[in-house]
Amino acid sequence: MINDIRATLLQGLAGVALLVGAFFSWRQLQIGRRGQITQRFTAAVEQLGSSSPEVRLGAVFALEHIAHDSPDDRVTIAEVLCAFLKRTGTSDPFRARPVARDEAHKGALARTYGGEGPMSVRSVDRQAALTVLGRRAKAPYHHQLGLDWADLRQVRLPFAGLADADLHYSDLAIAGLRGADLRRADLTGTWLAGANLIDADLHQADLRSAILWHARLDGADLAATDLTGADLTGAVLRGARLDQADLRGTDLTGTDPTTCSLTGAVADTTTVWPSGFDTAAAGVVTAAEDAPPLRPQSVQDLPR
Image 1 (spheres, rainbow, N blue to C red):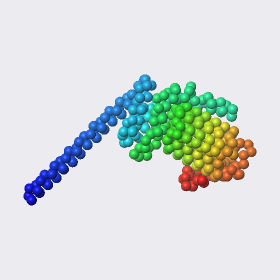
Image 2 (cartoon, helix red, strand yellow):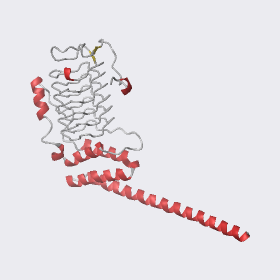
Image 3 (cartoon, rainbow, N blue to C red):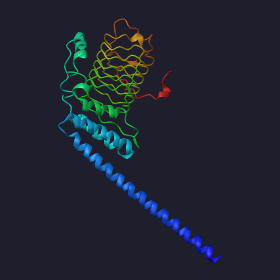
Image 4 (cartoon, rainbow, N blue to C red):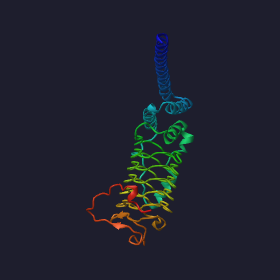
């Protein structure tokens, strides 16, 4: 019996030693893996500063692979790519904007102001960085993309995930954002002239003073958005939802509001409607001049 007890104790000690050894081996592997990821990250960031667009393109996708392998680094990588995009723009997103002379000039600018071609042709590395950000995996904690004051003209980001992104005063002229998720995004003062926002989700987005000349908003969800002072001259609103949107000071010249939903939308005397449009019949609420700004509505409060 004593021998059996000794054998059992020895086996137990051997098992404990085996577990301890396994733990330290696993820990060593984790440290080694962390070191490899750090080396890969450092190399990719250095390559982003290369003068070769091909090297920069490879660096962008290398960072995407690292984000896939290491969830803890996803926020850092997103911030690096945002900084890269803001640093490498070729125009001043705000001060370089042209001033429209009249309604016809707005239409001309919406078709022509946007760079020499699509971003995917003139700046393939920057297009790749935005594509990676638009399809990024979920981070361990909430993070807001910082793409404010960025030159993003003629970018192509269909169905991109940009919810809660900060894009205020950025230049998204003639951008392809069909089906993009822009819920609660900060688009204050953003230039979106000629942009394709068909079926985009802009629920509760902040579009104060945004430029949306001749933008395609067919089927877009603009419910509870703040469009105070926005210019939608010539925008296509077929099937769009603007329920409970703030339209005070909004310019809707050249649009057809009868093709969209406006139940509970708020307007005032500074809202510019197309001639003959019956706001009361459309369900628009007229606010007093001293009425406070609307606050974002929850999705539960919106009519379905």
